[in-house]
Image (cartoon, rainbow, N blue to C red; front, side):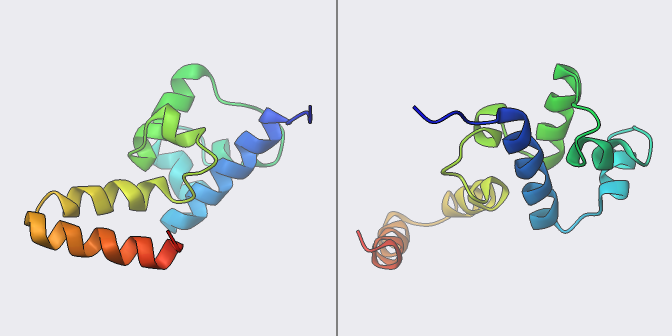
Length: 107
């Protein structure tokens, strides 16, 4: 069984989500009510957030902790946004979107 370094994975995931959101580490830190170097310190292996800090990070990205740790969810913020928009569609429109997604994923 292969060992996964979860602390490194956490830092990589945080960085990926932050870049996908198009926000700087400094701006995210300040938005979380932390010092301007807070996120930078996490991403650069100097610290890890507390559990409360982690929940604030998830709230910042509008994702759940489960979505944060789901390696199959490459862009959970966009997935949530897409789901919100899909709820506005008619059943026929939803079926068309489903067929399009299946075509794109090869399923």
